Length: 106
Image 1 (cartoon, rainbow, N blue to C red):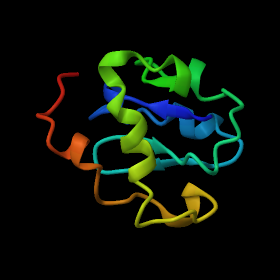
Image 2 (image 1 turned 90 degrees about the horizontal axis):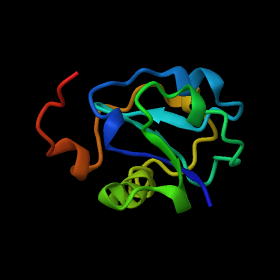
Image 3 (image 1 turned 90 degrees about the vertical axis):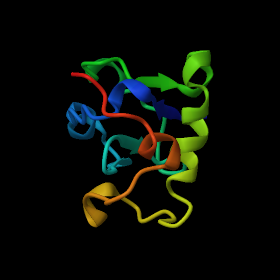
Image 4 (image 1 turned 135 degrees about the vertical axis):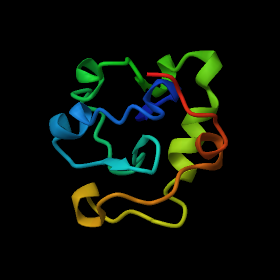
C-alpha cells in the first residue's frame, strides 16, 4: 500500500508535501507531483500538509480519481527507482492522464 496524489494537484504543485517527506519519494512532473510506490514508507506525513487535499492513502482514494493510482505507478516505468527525488530533479513530462487535462483553474 502507498499514498497517491490525485487530480487536485494538477497545475498547483505546492510542494509542501516534498518538504515533509522523510524519504524523498515525491517527484515533480511537468504539471503535478507523483509519489513513488516503491520508495514510499506509508508514514503519512505528506497528507495533512497538502493545501488542496490531493493526497490519499491508496484504499481511501475517491472513486472519481481512481485512475490516479495507476498514473502514480506508471509515471515511474521509465524512471525506475532512483532512490530519491532530489537526485533527479524536475521531470519534464507527465503521465498521459495528466498531460491531456485542460489547464486547471487556481
